[in-house]
Image 1 (cartoon, rainbow, N blue to C red):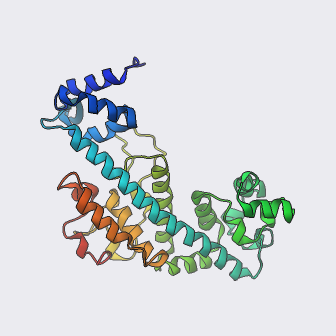
Image 2 (image 1 turned 90 degrees about the vertical axis):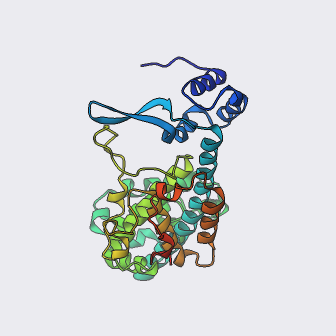
Image 3 (image 1 turned 135 degrees about the vertical axis):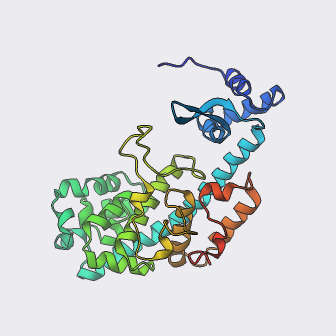
Length: 326
């Protein structure tokens, strides 16, 4: 069904008619719509919509609850924006150290410097794929890179193929997701275990699942997606696309009971609090002097638009005393 075009003025009227405060806020509402767009802002209006039961199913109505205010909605948007900056900062630190570890431990394990010489070290699952398929994404990034070191190898050293680069250069021509796939499917188990243990995780499969979670979160942040109250699961009842990831699938169960979401007082894997906890733990190795956790606490204290926001994010009561945070 095609929807007719609506001007900013008409969009504002629509929200006001649905119960958003009163017409006195219309000029400011139009400014907000011009700044971020109706579609993006609507995600932050969602918690303020009334619910009803239709045919035994709870649904959201296109009417706001009493007391829905533009200021509160906008504060949620600003909080989420600042939270994304913090999450991206943490992911960047972890990703860079992960790249270093993959390159260093990989080359160290076989004693040679370039991927072409490391073919035999690839795990069988990765080795079964054609070399073209395996390397084409790395090659494409190398060919179009404008970094000085890319020019140096392409033009000064005449290195045309990405597999002829030193490993520590090779891994730079990859997205975080492609690098994780190389780690997960390409490196042998003993090497993956070594890298996981460097981050403090004896359970390699669980560590790998956390890296997949960070890849997914990074992509959401990069596209300015809503994070603070995101529900990270596939909803079969509402027929959300089946290829959407589930946080519970990405973050597999760990042997460490601290990560068991079924235990009282632990973190629900379907909520953003679990992601923040994973970043906090990973940063103990990747950037243990960053004070990232202090900045997160300050954000929660100073910018929270709701006294219940921590619970909405999935933090249990007294979470600051949990072993993973304490």
